[in-house]
Length: 468
Image 1: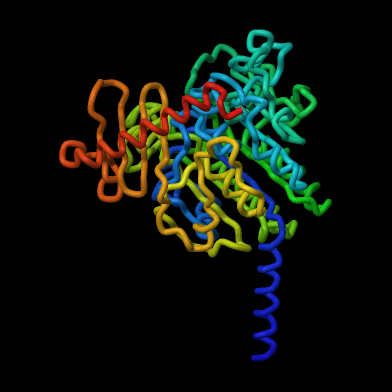
Image 2 (image 1 turned 90 degrees about the vertical axis):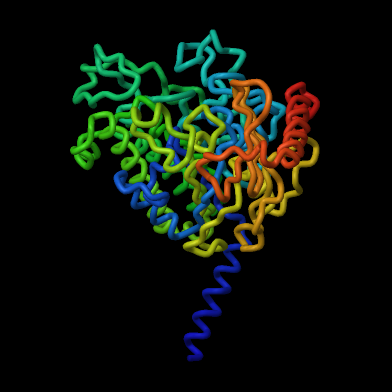
């Protein structure tokens, strides 16, 4: 018995010591992955065993939100803690990360972290000299803002989308936006038009065949290995392109879904290929002895692409999809794992958002919160410790004329299509947003509309440069 008590005491002491050290931080994000596209949210077709294991090993968010219904704005919120309208990236392929903004990478470097970005950037162009992706080259020089000028030491980054298999290729004669079958030889393909760039501004072409998620992880893991061996805390962003169009899966992954249409084979297959790389990362962290004190987040940047019934992506029981501020456009799969501090097998219904990353991480490190500009996120540390039952502070959204104000229970939503009254939903009783309560609860709708208007005014002030 004494020996058992000694072992328990030693284990508790080790856990306490690890929790007191600076945690390693990894932010994983998918691109256009729907709330219903993963096993831990009930999908019975798409195989995501490693994400499901991560859900059991940590905390699953039932109400995790992307800050925007499209990619670029959400990505900026992850590293600034701010709503996209504050820092000038209101929609995809618009604006760039400004030098006046404080990014997580810049802040963590001051705390002794080494920093790396791997995958999709989409917060500015990566080259001023050659045509690249959506805006790169001389035509987009004013939007040049690569990861390395925003605090990242190591980069393996694209400006925007690439195919999810053979990311630098497009088969000759194929102009599809949705999917295609892989080519065996490079001579059968043309350049896709989007390049990978490193921290020196050099285009990288070696080891870029096969699953794009594996290509990305092949760069992220050596970065983590080097930092661990040097006993330096690391901050790694791994932003997969999966399952943004064009979706392409290799033969082994397509075979897993051979009874489904080709479009679905590629969509489902590339998700399973990505899931495999999440498993590879978690396994490597364990081998390195770094898993215990690594804070690992996973989410998507917005809801699924395409129309329900025509595209294979799923928002589950939620209404709306990508580009919509209805729940299916912004409520996304969300997980966090940190064995040193977060007990396994937990779920939460507290609304959380990508803007929460920055204030959470600063609070964990004991860094003074940012007070010289509005921060839209909150610290989730009390949630990790089981001391937060309600958010208590609504989350604001705005995109292409739509606005939303989401609290612990109620959501006020303006569609942007019709002038006049907003819609009011009870997200606890009606998460699918089937019943508009605005006429039944006019006082509540009016109060929430006033709060939303005040938040919008604050965002406008930020956009005008008053925060700087």
